[in-house]
Image 1 (cartoon, rainbow, N blue to C red):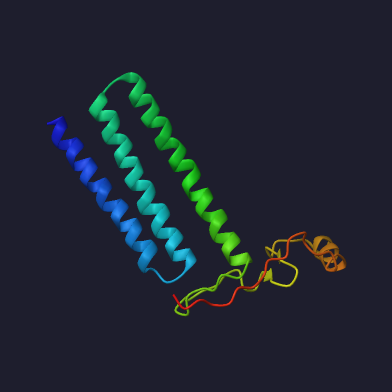
Image 2: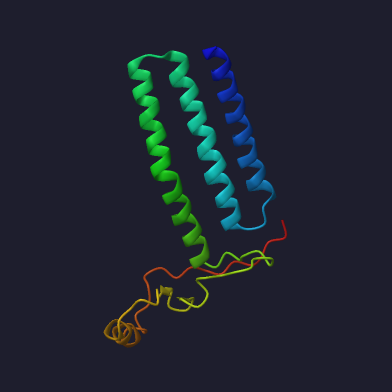
Length: 147
């Protein structure tokens, strides 16, 4: 019975990994690709680790599998958020069919500063006084590729 569960976990893991790969290839822009690769890829890796823990059944292997699962659950969303945010800030274009761009009104592409809308009047005054201070790294705008 446990063998059938392991087979089911490995097959479903392969399906989710394939789904993540197809999402990266087929989806139109960075945020949707990040969503597909993070969700489906992390679930596929978690299912593989669960199958490995069940197959070996030793305390050391199960402990390592649980540690890897926790690591994936903690790091995958944070890494995807950081990559997606960096892509937005350097000017990676969104898909034309995107319905909402919530950062558009809060992000200044010239100064590369993000305003949350929760700043106090004093913080906004300090921000306006320091507009001439540029960030250390100024990203270059890339031309849109045709592939």
